[in-house]
Length: 456
Image (cartoon, rainbow, N blue to C red; front, top):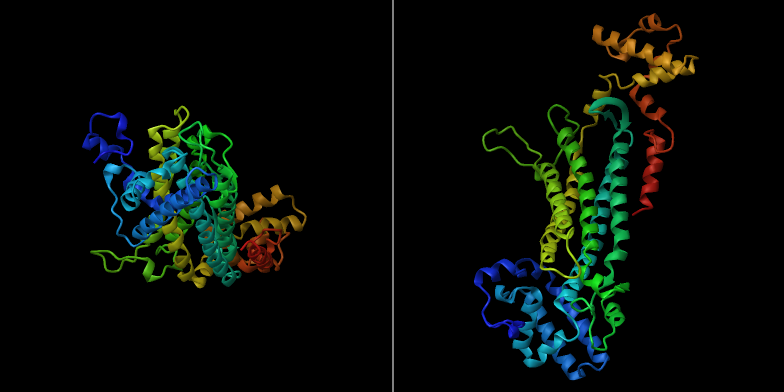
């Protein structure tokens, strides 16, 4: 089979080279975008008198026939045709004859593939913004239902202070809100048209790049043709945002794994999001959040791979850039699956309120409030801190928690203690005492939730 670019060559391409250099195995993902870009291109060519209206209609109708075959799964991709562009162009020429060869007038595969990837990533990014919101909605729902659910808050994985479980979950809402905002901001850099930049220097034909940008709903046109075909910043930015998003999802997944363990028993994941053991029938494994943690590394790898590919490339297009597609597509598919499974998993998880409540009644996470209590009675914070440290040590030695100590025991350490210390030490009191803006008190969490709703 002769190549569409084969006029200068005297030998057929080695089959191993064809396999090694072909990208059709993965860039067929851009088939619809490639045809969309081609239709816009031939429309512009006709409007500028470069091809006739009859030729334009023939090419458009041929492209739509090919699009129908692609969408119904009957289009045959050929490795020898290397990429999505050559596969479609050859099929077009077979469909409508030599006039199909006019499709490529005034453009190059270099600006064509860049256009395809911009269109593809523009569509996918808008989809991810929607999917992130779906996760935010279920987090918001669980948070609303658990404003008054008390959970041990941790630092260094040591119990620190009682917090509202709703407050804890809302921390992830705001992480996702920043991810969503980053994706939204990236749209203005994705929505740029490279079409018509040619191989690197533009074209001698009287094309109108602004017109094709308009037809493809791009917001801007690359002002420099060399930058247009060699820029992959928009993919790097996407992979970077995706990596940050996966950091947040991985952290939440880790907490779900911990919370659902026998040692914690704070939540139970729905059976439909867990698996069993082949030899231990009692097991219920949180495989989904575990896999979400692992897929984070996959996304990181795609980012670092492209950074490495691009770091030493001179302008303009180089074959190295073929390696920009597979990692991007893989990340798109990973994010899509991750976000689609995360929302129903969070929504269906059962919160074990009593287990959480029991935990905060059997620890020293209310110790800070004794210090605050003593400060309000006239002690300095440093004095109070030392007194509480001694009380906690005493409690550990006596196998007692702070609510178990008698008033006489408290007064051994300071005469400032009174009977009202027991009201201060109740977990609900400790939680609601944090009433500063953004704090974990019931009223602050409710305000936070109402505020969060304005972002959806």
